[in-house]
Length: 114
Ligand code: AMP
Ligand code: ZN
Image (cartoon, rainbow, N blue to C red):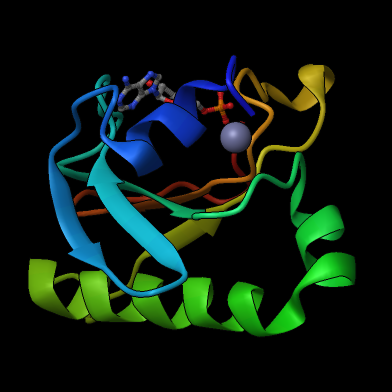
């Protein structure tokens, strides 16, 4: 999609600090980090929500989650643990409608989240 910010990160038209990339997904640092580690992982194809991705391309959703684990290990937060968040819908805080996993860690993570 030409007017999608994260599609432009995939093509390189918008710069990002990429930490991992596979044939199907890209992981890059969030521009406004909410934790010492805050990485976003996106599929290269455009799917608005995580449920859309699950329906359309479940193998890429699995790859996205495994990339999250790989990033967590590389950042040293696999232990004690990290959080994966998919905000879905404006009421939940989704602002970019190209599905993205937030991988958060490196500080205490309250439960339940706000
Ligand atoms: P959400 O509110 O769940 O849709 O998450 C969108 C996230 O994208 C926010 O955490 C923003 O800080 C982040 N973001 C917006 N623009 C950029 C950008 N150009 N590079 C990296 N992260 C971005
Ligand atoms: Zn997109």
